[in-house]
Image (spheres, rainbow, N blue to C red):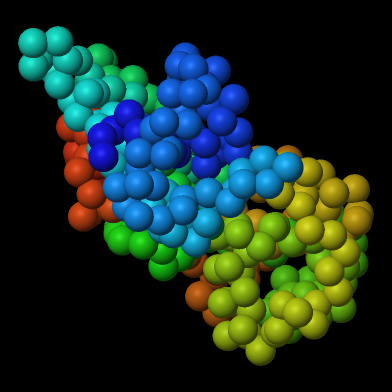
Length: 298
């Protein structure tokens, strides 16, 4: 087998079409078919299930896809690492980050990184913590930042920043009390707006609430939202209360538009982590980026 055959195989698996693959790779459809046939003959298996609706991966095809995708990713890294005549041509460093680090930590980190290494190019993907782990494990990102640790593949987590989760409420008189018993009562009885399931904020809040004797599944959940700004505005307008990072609500609290209260005995502390796959070959830029993060926070 060769990389051209694997490239055609991966493209067909993703597009589910021989004709679309031909257009995508700028080759003829018979060439695509020949690549797939050669792979199937060499591996002595059927890689696709053909039907009138298109093609889908067989069980063996799914297994091969996992390997082929990694091989093509390695080829890409080699080409990025070595340019013409074997000289380094640079590459785009792909960074995956969950909401809080993406909006409040990453801008300063990137500014410092570009100051130290002006020739490096960066591409940022904003997702939730589960998405960060998935992108690192599947090698679709080189480094990442997450608000909770999710075991996925060979993901390595290094705590770099201590964040604080707080309970936020409307700025009305009935939320003026600040003792711990009042906060527990609100969390059990008031309408609550939560982040989405894959959010690090939600996962860490679940752990802290459990320590407080509160089961998140028994809370009066009014809504689930991905956008923390929408959550903050919804709380401000009186829709309910929520649990968010202090970084995301500090300005609104200082302006008196909402109130915030400590979450649990620990004050809702959680670690924001740098994430990467220590076992996977990385671009030189990734090593430089990790060093920059350590210089700032560690």
